[in-house]
Image (cartoon, rainbow, N blue to C red; front, side, top):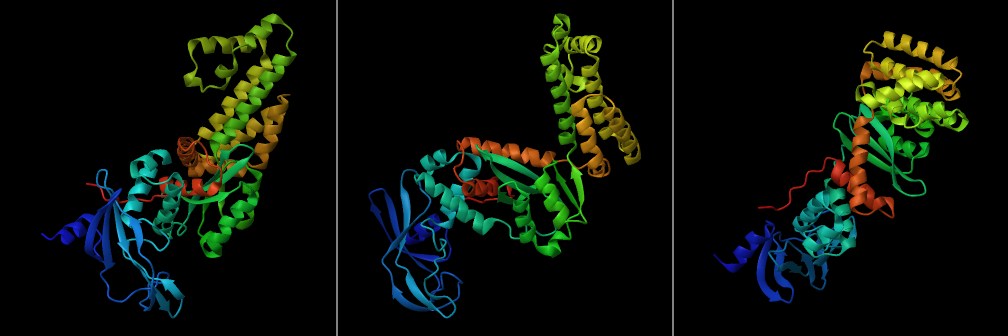
Length: 405
């Protein structure tokens, strides 16, 4: 077998010819040329006449052991009827890249599973270059049809930095993939997503799961008046838990009786836990609360009744129980629960939508945890653009096929 044929098979790119190879300091430099006869425009890929030739360029390829491999070629400039004078297209790399597609696939594959510093050590490239490669891979592999046929979506915010730096993440419940990420968490951020969808695809959306963020509610109500809004049941229960904790803290401040204060001490978690998770000592603490602090125990019963209302499978029974809960909370003389009763009355239909659909924001919250791992292994991000690229790379359903054995 000829040396040039062997090198061509090792490189693994079909549309090129190998002319010669030379060992230089730091690796192997392989002179290559495209296999097609006529040059092609670097922008549109159309065949075009040659304009003049440029100096030799090198593209980083896969490394074999300690040996770096570089592909070297002197590209032509082409005179394209549509695009004008452009650098010609090469079959082994993107127009603005200094790495072959196979090398970029491997770099992005490593970035999916580990931090950029480790990728830098394994591939021998700069830390910032890893991010640039990831962005290019996202541009050519992210599905352009990810926004088509959206019927059930989930919306949530993600804090990527201190001082209220947020991203808005939109997830497709059916494919369980992130389909859109925007900078900010306001209603305008979500409107940008709907503007990108356009009216026809917006009409296909049937259900939207979210928490009770006012900006998101206003944007969805305005842009998707036909869609069913489903409030996440766990956020609703969290409101009840927060109200109960507020009652407990107020009692701690006001209680002067030592015996009564002893009953409240260490009662936070038994009050907030699910009944089946309460330990024996926790049940003893709840009995002490029932004996010495009737208002606090009343708040605990209200929290449990709200969870029971959301456990029903029949909308009618859930509605009746929720009405009873609101009436009881309104006359409970517990200010946090009185406020919560007003909130639940206002959004009762959106809360009850969970009973018939059984949709929650659990999928979105789970992907948020994955995004948090991505952010922590990078020790944070200064700007949203690199994080958005990593979110699509790891949570957007991108399947990479690096040249592995």
